[in-house]
Image (cartoon, rainbow, N blue to C red; front, top):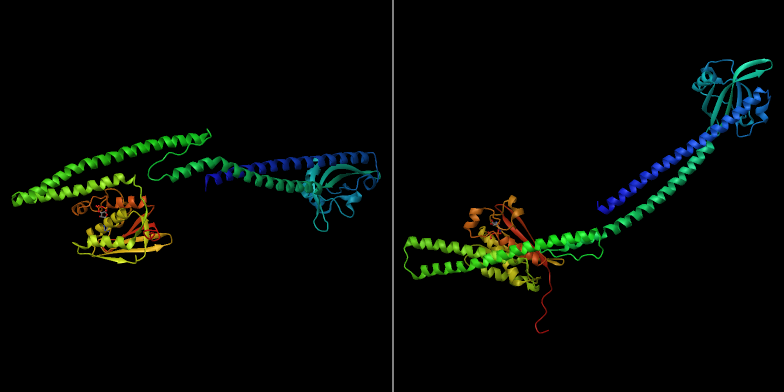
Length: 469
Ligand code: ADP
């Protein structure tokens, strides 16, 4: 997940959590307020009715109460809450809103009422679709019937539906508003984060585009954190370039300096071998010196080559693959027991430097022949915009664990054996450097005892324009 998505998601989640909390809080407060008002209203109504009852207001419930108030005066001949919860007390008076219904509390509510003299309870009156829920305040009162005074209760209730409807409406409006706010905020946050991260992405893109040699990045106009980052990166890259250049210069100078004494050694050994009488033992020693000096010359040449690789500028030309293959076959067919076969490169052209590509193929074929291949296939094919070249041999193969390192400098599979065969351990490193300078790629597949395939991918090209045009 990108940083941009993560920040946007985090901001949106935080906002969603805050909106949820806020919504929950306001809903709770609103509910509390509405129920408190209802309770106050019921308490007031109940007090008024009690006062009227005390002053003997006869059929007051049927005439004196608003139609939305549900009230009933009950007389208790029993004080068993279980009995009362089943039947209710004897209904003495009822408000018109109740009609044929009764206000009957639960057993627990009756018990509290009898014990404490007052209770808040919920009562559900049967109705067509869903029961009508009422909030009821029940108070113990004295009920006078004729001359006798009985224990009883006054129950006053009002439907909670308007409150629930208000709360539901609030929830709906709030949820829609919150969703809209959330959506707009997410879009806004995404845009803002993108704007904030754009310069960093620019730095990453520029830094990613830098190839082998570190180049400095253009400094942005703004004097902000990105500017500081680019400056720090540039300072680091300057130091890297200096180190790289020092190393390259050292390598080039050392190789160059070594070439002269090696040439002198080879010259003198050749002279001694050809022009002076030497004993058999001396000849043997001189042959060893000659062989080792030649190995050293190859090593030094490879080193010099590699040291220059960072500065290679390939001038790409259309190169006829078949001709290239034929040159290589010509070069290697003599003095080796293995045969070199060409496959499918008839009208193929790649874009590259012919000498360097020759060097690549020569290095690969040398390796194949050193690995005792009896048959080396040079193969070419076109795949889309690329040309694929392969050097396949049936030699010793490379053990699997060595494959990831094979293109490293001085890497040899079997140090003693490969030294004996005259390798510097730089051949494949040079191959890779040349391919990279061409914007190409190289990879290897191999099976021990069966053989090896090196595959090169290079940009394809059309044939060169005819001369004189
Ligand atoms: P060198 O110059 O010593 O040949 P390279 O970099 O060309 O070094 O190759 C590295 C090692 O990879 C070699 O020492 C050799 O053991 C192994 N190698 C390369 N090509 C082949 C091949 N076609 N078959 C078997 N082994 C190979």
